Length: 440
Image (cartoon, rainbow, N blue to C red):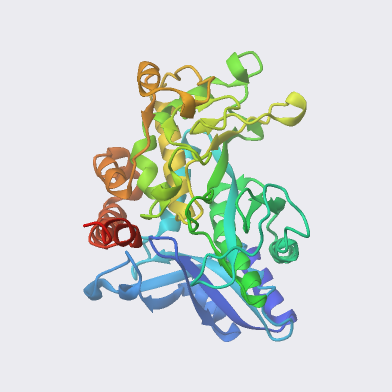
């Protein structure tokens, strides 16, 4: 038996853990769970736990419904928001078919497969996301709890205790938090997770989203990662800092090159720019995502890169002390994405650029929002898709996205998002009633 498994079994007994929740995500990134007792734990490690996959979004048809959840013992953690006595723990699972093969509709498997490609090229992939979200009184109202702004503290920021409690929960589960603060919009907040390998980080993002919601619920409030819940306010993004490593060396750093970016870094950025439109539907998968991706709210709209310019889609943040810890920040994803698929698509697009030795265009030095259409066109700066329908079309044409996701997941995702768009198209909104009913 592996050491990780022995540790889990011993901890469950010593800490009087009564239930172990097995976690996994559906294709859209919603957390799924079922619980087992300690008596079933060894069997779960040896054989996995069977469940019906036909009711899980994107998993299997009724006639192919048997699935097996195999817990990953390295992800074992006790849930701090559950009682201390007779406690509850969790483990993330890899989803398998009954014959022991990885299930092609499992988002965690998609990321594992993409990371394996990076490994074959000699790289490991590290990410550090910034998760923005809102606190509201309930899920049926967007009335903010405060009128605070960027970095505001009490008394304007009444949620500082909620943020502090969230950090305590996450750190007790081994998830390092770099910082937390009030964001630009009223009642908007941000939690920055310290970078780690992409698979661990995808698990951490799923855990952090649940922890934020659990803390809000304890206070009788509601937390949402909806990209744009308030009309006229800033939306919530998930700016993601990325780096490739070769062993312990940052493969993006070259002190003798332009902007201190290595050849690998330049090709990686060029690959992401080349495929930015293709991967947008995965990184911004909801109709509402595109209410955030509009000019005027610091959200990236135009496909270009810059050294520090925050109006660019990709930028190179300043490193403290001028060291070699180079990161590339991808600014378009939102926190309602499926992190396994989003990280897989970011990596796949960048690796394709590296494989192709893609050439990096010059950086955008000016505020792109203030440039005219002709000026942007002259610089070869395209726009991200304006809505989910346009993003679906770009995704559907992309061989990169299909090969990364695999046929099963790719086809389901397209069908599901088309249903979303068709429902949205036929919906008569309050905007139309307010603007048109009195005059038409």
